[in-house]
Image 1 (cartoon, rainbow, N blue to C red):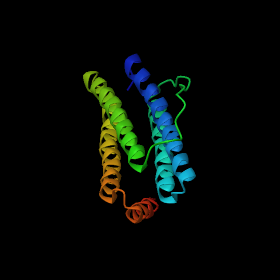
Image 2 (image 1 turned 30 degrees about the vertical axis):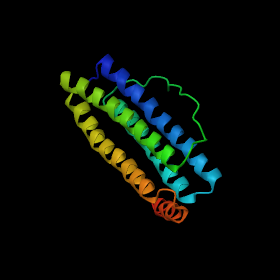
Image 3 (image 1 turned 90 degrees about the vertical axis):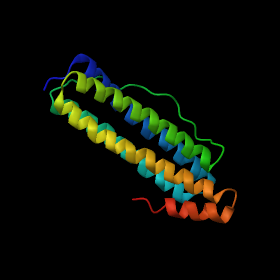
Image 4 (image 1 turned 45 degrees about the horizontal axis):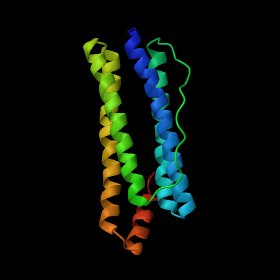
Length: 164
C-alpha cells in the first residue's frame, strides 16, 4: 500500500518526535543521575531506549510499505535540571500526551485515506500510548503519595529501579 505524501510526511515527522523523546528522557535521566537517584535514573534510561525502539518501528514501517525516509529532523536542547521528582514526571506525562495527539492525527489521516496497513500499525501505537501515559500517571501518583517524606521518596526510587 503506497503512502500518500501527507501520510509519509507525518510518519517521517513521527520518527523525529520519537527520537526527540529519547533525548528528552535522557536529559531527565541526567537530572536523577546528578541527584543520586538510581531508580528514577534507570526508569528513564529504559524509557529513552523504548522511544528509540519506537522510532525504529516507524522507520521499518515506512520502508516496509516502500516509503521514502526523509532526512532525520533536528530537535531542541533538553534541560537536565528540574525542580523535583514530581516536576520531571509531570513534564514526561505532558510530553507523552503530545506524542499521543500526534499519533492520533496520523491515524485519522490513515482512516481518511483508507490506508489499512498504516491504520493497523498506528492503532498498535494508540494502545502503546495508553500504556505510556498510564505509566507516567502511576509514577506521579506514587510521588504525590510520598509527598515530602524522604523515606517514602527513597522507596519510590527503589520501586522505579525495578523497571525492566
